[in-house]
Every structure is written in C-alpha cells, then in structure tokens.
Length: 251
Image 1 (tube, helix red, strand yellow):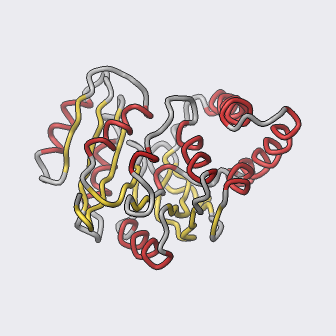
Image 2: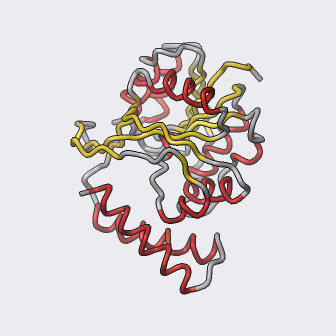
Image 3: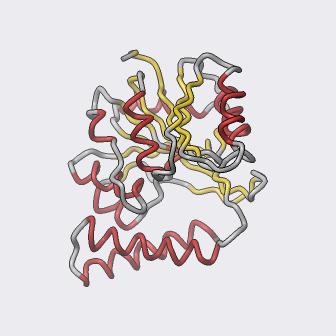
C-alpha cells in the first residue's frame, strides 16, 4: 500500500456517453499521486471499448472487466479489493471533479486527522452544465445527524485506511448502499468531516426524475426499517427530517 496514493474507484455501466468526461476530470487533477480503477459492470453499449481507449492514455488508469451487471455496490467492492492506495475516493461514472478536488480534500483530511471526509457539490443537468444549485455541507456529521441529513454524496467522499480499516469500506449489497455504508461507519463512532467547498458536479439525467424520487423515498424508508432496525415511529421522525432536507437541497 502506497502511503500517499489515492485510489479512485468508479463503477461503470452503460456509460459510454459520460465516462470520457469523468475520466478527463480525474486526469486534470492538480494532485498527481492517484490511481483510477474503472470497474466495468456488464455494459451493453460501447463502454468497454471506450474504457480500453482511456486506459491507454495514462498508466495510472486500470480497467476491471467484471463480466456481468452485479450492481454498483459489488463493482465498487471489486475496485476496493484491487486498490493499492492508502486513501480511497469514490466517483460515479457520470459525475465530474473540479481540478483541485483531490488536493483540497486531502489537505483537509490531514488537517482534521480524519478517517472520513466529504465535500460540497453542485447539481448539473444531463449535459454536465452547472445549474447554480450548490449543496453546502456541515462541519461534521455523527450517526444521528447523518440519518436526518443524507447530504454526504458518494462522489465527494474520501477515506484514510490508516485510520479506518479498509474492510469497513465494503458496501452492503442493498439499495442505497452508499448511504447505508455512511451510516454503518458513523454508527461505529467515527465522525464525518465536511469540507464546505463546491468541488464536484453531480450530473442528473433528465429521464424518469419523478419515478427516481419515488424510488429514493422507498429506499430511504427501507434503510430506516431494515438496515437501522428503527421502530415505525422513529422511522417516521427521521424520514420527515430527511425529506425536508432532501427537498431543500434540490429547490
């Protein structure tokens, strides 16, 4: 394990229209000590060909061909197994990083001596055009606070595996696996530190936004009931708090 290397893990599925821009945002980072692990997850378009093309551009890029669509959680977990860096960062295949993202976040992590950090971000449309809606983040989040405020966005997080065991970062194979992982880590007593700078563009495709919202509600409710094992009344209380904050981030 390299003591300075950042391992960036990207699950990739049917992303031929987006992945070039995402990889370019990594190649443009002011911090150069990174490896990019692209975990291809059974795409049915030309994603594999695009990834092979990108892999030739830089020796820091590695492509894992997983062979079938096992879902984002398993793809990230395979990437985590292959990671050689001390620091772990997740990035979704259609999101973009600002060029100073890794450098600023790593500086912040060292300043706070933190195991788990996350940053602010901005919503973008399907063409990655910023909408001007920037999500600010709190200085810290503990477990109870995070259950009311799921502002931790996957493409913004970074972990230090010297302060939190790598094995704790494997995502559960359930829906909303990323949120479930954040809650699990925080439940164990870790604190998440928020860097309140807009360093990530969250691309949101226009299709099926209304159905996605309904599915998001269902997934979060199931996390309260089946992952956190809260009773009905506590689940309702947390769910209402979550919903108010989630709506506030998007309007």
